[in-house]
Image (cartoon, protein in one colour):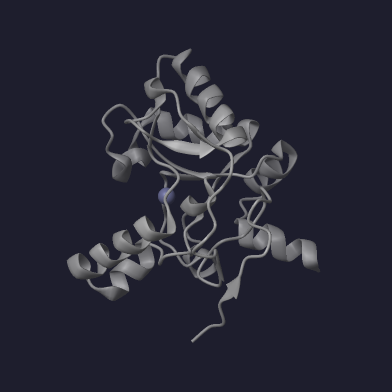
Length: 193
Ligand SMILES: [Zn+2]
């Protein structure tokens, strides 16, 4: 069993949350805001800066005739727990652990993660869309990174998730991560060296 550490800087935009670093049950971001309903499937919240950046990205992609929708954003500790349990019941523990996070271990609790789909709302197939190609190459300009890239499962602990983007606020760092095909884990551990 790997050690699990409690995150002590949950409000930082570069905070790492994964299977080794978890958020407390009490952590709820203080600046959650409702995303414009034109860009979500309803009642979706992100932290203020992430919300503004996401709406800007969603507005800009419309200028080239494409559309993105936030289908999952902030999730509470309790909701994440029930989501994980439903995956376990449905598909078994091993599968659940590769594609869903336990309570406290999801970036969605930070209010900085957004699952994106196009108008079909079929996020599972997002990587087969034109919207994905654009978001992949442009999201860093808004401070987002693709959080669970292909062939990085051994580092992130999750299978490839073309729909899941993480707001990190700093456009320079987001570009560096994009240019060098890094994960947040790799970027942060390079800093420590
Ligand atoms: Zn997600």
